[in-house]
Image (cartoon, rainbow, N blue to C red):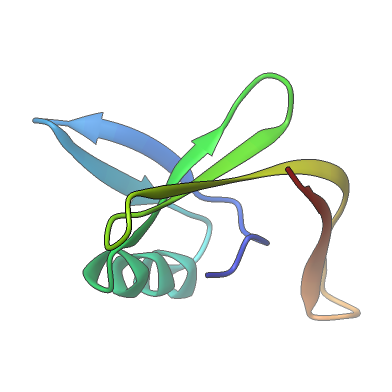
Amino acid sequence: MNLCHSLIVEEKNGKKQYSGSSSDEECIMEFCVSCGMYYEGIDENKIMTVVNTLNNLKYRFRVVSVREYSSDLGKMSILVEDL
């Protein structure tokens, strides 16, 4: 799963919906969900949570640094710490 994205998680009718700045981000996340992994979101302390529904494990990462998308580089970067 790609942790470097700008997805926003919304819950509608008991189902998580992802909206991002590109259709690629949304497509990758939809594929992850179909494989049993989903992104829960990021909290006010910059802690990202990812859930694996196949083994009921939660993975947590603290966002250390973000380099926003640059058209010169053609990408964005993120540095996370595994909690």
